[in-house]
Length: 251
Image (cartoon, rainbow, N blue to C red; front, side, top):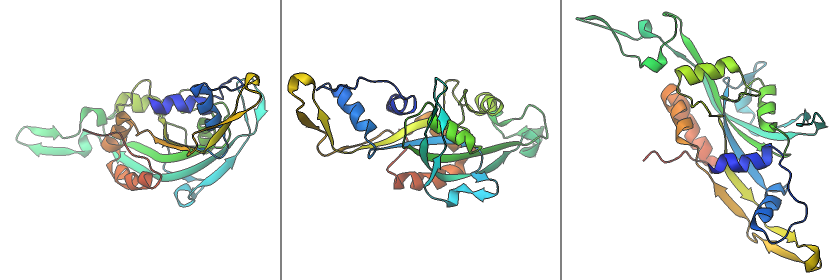
């Protein structure tokens, strides 16, 4: 949806023409590239928000300034602001941990998707909801910075944890094509565009009042949290609201 398309403009560092005319697409791109514009992503990551004994959830917004290589192997500056909203560890019990003894013996109350492959072995769920605001547009910047913080994005097949991704897909209903990174809000500042040579270098105001657009978090990401981490969902909803971000309507 809207999140993935706008996200690719920023994260993949797409190449666009430098000479802008009145084309609406080029105007939007220039507004997105303005350093004062804000793109706020929502990520569902592995890990409870603790790194080397430090609780990242208590830091508020903090900055990671760590160079990364682009798709051609060149080292480029990369700056991302992060806010770890909430996260914790949940242990999902198997059928022997959720039993109900009736006249027919053991009755399992646990949905099939919760069960472990081997009995008596609890399956830990460690996840956090994180906000990210890239200040530069490098190749897979958010994904790589979060992986560097030992909190890879769930579903990220390139920089994530393949074992954890497989567990979420096979046992916790994560969509096969899902990478849990979503562009939730774009705040564009008023932008002036320089016209082409044929217009003698004249300028025109684009978005004179700026633009503030939100794109709700998709239903499948909501369900991943609601089913397997309901307490996390309760905690994160008001924190997302502080940043003007909501979940897709459940109606």
